[in-house]
Image 1: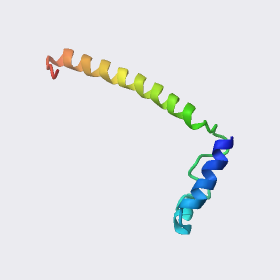
Image 2: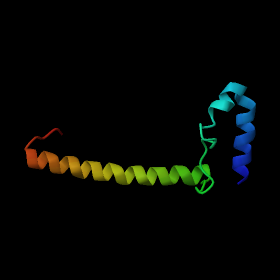
Image 3: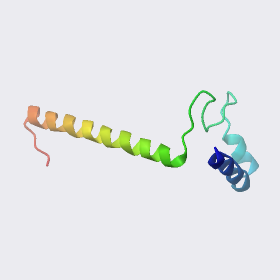
Image 4: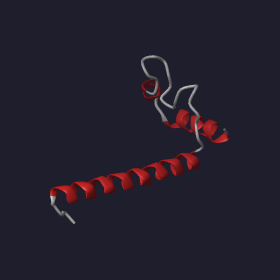
Length: 76
Protein backbone atom coordinates (compact mmCIF):
# COMPACT_ATOMS: atom_id res chain seq x y z
CA UNK A 1 0.00 0.00 0.00
CA UNK A 2 2.20 2.86 -1.19
CA UNK A 3 -0.40 5.46 -0.25
CA UNK A 4 -0.34 4.25 3.38
CA UNK A 5 3.37 4.95 3.83
CA UNK A 6 2.85 8.40 2.30
CA UNK A 7 0.06 9.05 4.80
CA UNK A 8 2.29 7.95 7.67
CA UNK A 9 5.10 10.25 6.47
CA UNK A 10 2.60 13.11 6.15
CA UNK A 11 1.21 12.58 9.66
CA UNK A 12 4.74 12.48 11.08
CA UNK A 13 5.44 15.88 9.53
CA UNK A 14 2.28 17.71 10.57
CA UNK A 15 1.46 16.32 14.01
CA UNK A 16 3.01 17.57 17.22
CA UNK A 17 4.24 14.89 19.66
CA UNK A 18 1.19 15.22 21.93
CA UNK A 19 -1.11 14.88 18.89
CA UNK A 20 0.66 11.70 17.80
CA UNK A 21 0.12 10.25 21.26
CA UNK A 22 -3.60 11.05 21.12
CA UNK A 23 -3.91 8.93 17.98
CA UNK A 24 -3.19 5.82 20.03
CA UNK A 25 -6.12 4.31 21.91
CA UNK A 26 -5.86 3.21 25.51
CA UNK A 27 -5.44 -0.44 24.49
CA UNK A 28 -2.51 0.47 22.24
CA UNK A 29 -4.32 0.09 18.91
CA UNK A 30 -3.75 2.81 16.35
CA UNK A 31 -6.86 4.68 15.24
CA UNK A 32 -6.24 3.73 11.62
CA UNK A 33 -7.72 0.26 12.07
CA UNK A 34 -6.99 -3.16 13.42
CA UNK A 35 -4.65 -5.74 11.93
CA UNK A 36 -7.52 -8.00 10.87
CA UNK A 37 -9.35 -5.22 8.98
CA UNK A 38 -8.79 -4.62 5.29
CA UNK A 39 -7.54 -1.11 4.66
CA UNK A 40 -8.88 0.15 1.35
CA UNK A 41 -7.11 2.73 -0.78
CA UNK A 42 -8.76 6.15 -0.43
CA UNK A 43 -10.53 6.02 -3.81
CA UNK A 44 -12.07 2.61 -3.10
CA UNK A 45 -13.02 3.68 0.42
CA UNK A 46 -14.87 6.74 -0.89
CA UNK A 47 -16.64 4.75 -3.61
CA UNK A 48 -17.74 2.16 -1.04
CA UNK A 49 -18.92 4.87 1.35
CA UNK A 50 -20.90 6.64 -1.39
CA UNK A 51 -22.57 3.40 -2.49
CA UNK A 52 -23.56 2.55 1.08
CA UNK A 53 -24.82 6.09 1.68
CA UNK A 54 -26.91 6.05 -1.50
CA UNK A 55 -28.55 2.77 -0.49
CA UNK A 56 -29.19 4.05 3.04
CA UNK A 57 -30.77 7.23 1.62
CA UNK A 58 -33.12 5.07 -0.49
CA UNK A 59 -34.15 3.03 2.55
CA UNK A 60 -34.79 6.17 4.60
CA UNK A 61 -36.85 7.72 1.79
CA UNK A 62 -38.97 4.56 1.48
CA UNK A 63 -39.55 4.46 5.23
CA UNK A 64 -40.52 8.14 5.35
CA UNK A 65 -42.89 7.65 2.44
CA UNK A 66 -44.54 4.73 4.23
CA UNK A 67 -44.85 6.74 7.45
CA UNK A 68 -46.45 9.66 5.58
CA UNK A 69 -48.85 7.35 3.78
CA UNK A 70 -49.88 5.53 6.98
CA UNK A 71 -50.19 8.69 9.08
CA UNK A 72 -51.84 10.78 6.40
CA UNK A 73 -49.25 13.51 6.91
CA UNK A 74 -47.68 14.95 3.75
CA UNK A 75 -44.53 16.94 4.37
CA UNK A 76 -43.46 17.40 0.77
